[in-house]
Image 1 (cartoon, helix red, strand yellow):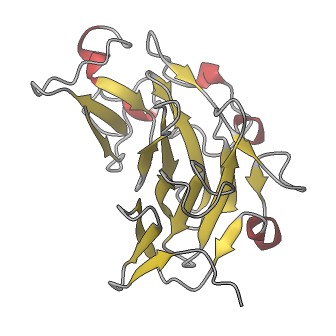
Image 2 (image 1 turned 120 degrees about the vertical axis):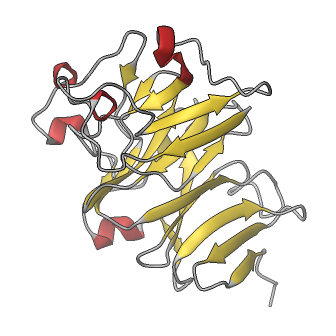
Length: 232
């Protein structure tokens, strides 16, 4: 099926978790469209069933775990708390009530618009200082070695960094290094723990190529291919 994400467009409605806001208007959502053009996901009731997820501020990256088929996405905060999320059907990402872990906000799920069949989940990783995260890509290949195979890469537009994450054994979260036990990079030092490469310029797209290597496209129009280092 075809998946598409629509940002919040500065709306303050039900889909942005305003309980007394305007009715759903196809903003802050992920749609899943079948081959007949129907967006019916069978999780939310009635006319809301076309929404695979809601409560999303802005997203510039989605990809599917090649092992489980689960959808993951990136989401940008207004100035802070860029996120990586696991997106199950009926997912409410929490915007505009929260970005980042809910326990840092003073809010509870009772502050959200809880549509029937929906659920909230914290991001599996956040950056406290917004990096402008863009694309997300599972490497669908073993050509870079076992460490990288079927694990996760994320790019950003602000710093030109390429981030790398190892998916946990259950494939519902990430294995993170020391200092990231709270699932948040609170500063540049903690962000460096998950930074694989720098100096790319603003990254806009990351893809596994037909050659099995990682390809990175930048806003300036540069295209990089990541291959194993040659033995000296």
